[in-house]
Image 1 (tube, protein in one colour):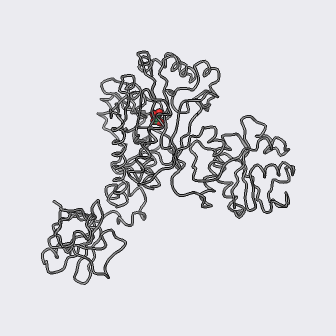
Image 2 (image 1 turned 180 degrees about the vertical axis):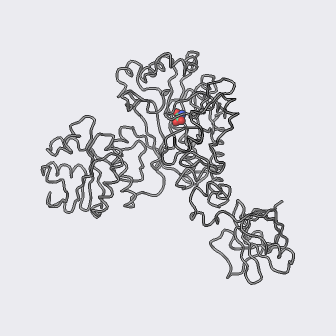
Length: 594
Ligand code: ASP
């Protein structure tokens, strides 16, 4: 139907007759001349109809926002005074000759350029309209270019794109499963995959050697900021590559992707141990664009009487750490109070601080409510250790290690942002040497990654000291966001069984849930490993969007619903019967909260 995209027209097309198809972005009537801004996925161009073309002018007069048109006209240069430098096609316009209304539009639920005036709920309800906005079009176009660049890279490296089932058994990745009842097996359920983890491992057992898939994953997680119940991973698995080789190849992929799509040359990816990351940044996904670091002062605080510091300093499970903010002495009491409130979200019971006014004047030159509790020489040693200078503020965290890391780690980011300390550009890194397990709320062990991750030690050492064992896992982090993570996997049955035992999965349960994996590991499973990147998060970072919902065509709301299709929805009693399902409460009772 069309000869050109609206947004692709330029001065190179002057005097050409073009046929365009698109939506009316705006229509203006200027003293007998009608201006239409016509929009398609490439952009917008101005079309002018004057009364010379009587019949078509009449039609142009009738169109309204979001009508779909096909029109033909001649491209001409705009006069100097009407050039619009803020518009990509602002040098030209199209003098309309013929206009066909392909379809009318009801009054839009919101003006596209006023989308911020309606809530996200309205935008999601009319998502097909919201997606007409140029910003959304650009994001989804970039998303497509990203997946295409990823595919090209992986295809070129000999990876095979192999699909894995959506109707399957539970694959534990730490979330709840979405379940699908089976009609043909009454009382039984499929689980939607939390990831293709076990299938990709089995593909390695089968000898495919290098696998990838742009895979949908499903996780029924508690409501947490910016998560989606279904999301997309770039899922990768390899055999006969060790962790260094896997990191190297996927780093090349991400580097190539940034070069191809954003024309960005990423800096080197340093490797940092998990222990180091927690110690220095209080986070296993540190944002290295912010130049602030946590510094431990436990040894010094073991020498003070001040209980608030002394207690955690003496406790092996506690930590006292300092966060020095250069130039932060100008932070007001009110701001400090706000930061104190902020760290309380992470369980911190207070936020001690010292302002450095005049270092040469010793303790006299410092300002703080806690100085009176500390001997001068300890304060002096601390200033030296922190490299304090006039004008700094130092914040302290003293509590259980987890609380200190979370609170000061988050404060580091917040203060860094508030103080304009976030460097421009990209700061990637690999975090390595994760612990195998962490203590669960009930006192047992849970895997930090998933139960198929190989430890760096043998099974005996692992059983003897699960709390200190490290895994062969690695995460790629970019600007404080975990882009992806993976590991070398367990490829021997006895090791997998040892890990299940530590996780308190007994033999019967292991057999029932993972018997197929345990069996497969007996038939010549090769050493293998891989990782998965969160595509939505990657696209979000690369487009500069602030939510993954903004880079997914049809996302769910925060409460895991689709307001456009009204899913999840009720089903007919007949359908439930077929599935052998009886609801415990009537639907009305559930809705009334009974
Ligand atoms: N299956 C893991 C995940 O979804 C990634 C991996 O280990 O490859 O996080």
